[in-house]
Length: 164
Image (cartoon, rainbow, N blue to C red):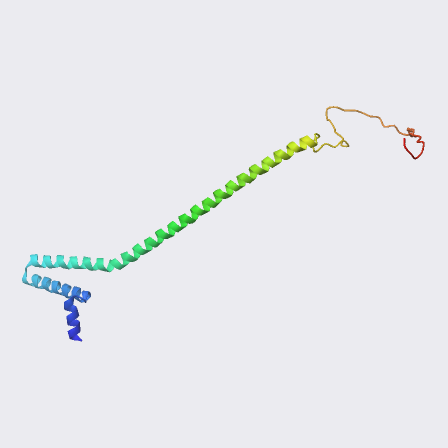
């Protein structure tokens, strides 16, 4: 098992182990530089460790950034679908408005034709009623009522049943 792990390590398959070993190496070199009083060597090892930390954080953030990009793409697709639905709804509403306009125009044409026909075949207004009494607030007429007056009956002699 040790031989298999060693071969995998040297082939570069175990990246996390490589990073741990690299970090341990630079940490050890930094401690030795500090112990020997070589500040420039310590500073160089600290900068290398900081770069490794930054790279590790980027590697750790890569899956999150990938997920974020996937989520943003899904949201964009959803927005496109919503925009398509809104466009389709607007087209349907416009079509309904056109149909209602045509229907209103046809109804108006029919009513005009009907009014013309009514004038041709019935010259009197539709609400004309000869038995209806009309009152005018400006003109007052007093018609005296005759009480007890006898109106003679009209009698017509007809010669009998037959032609006239």
